[in-house]
Length: 50
Image 1 (cartoon, rainbow, N blue to C red):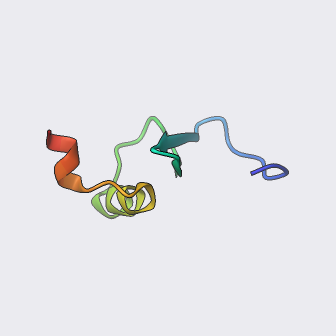
Image 2 (image 1 turned 180 degrees about the vertical axis):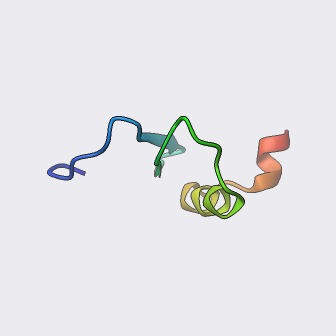
């Protein structure tokens, strides 16, 4: 993402070579946001409970 400034409160999360952006690390994730992030990462929700 060169040339695109990010706010200090954002962070990138990498899983198995896939990347998603966590917009505000201090706020709780909304369900829809979590599902979208998991889809971008290729992770199933059930994988989180293992």
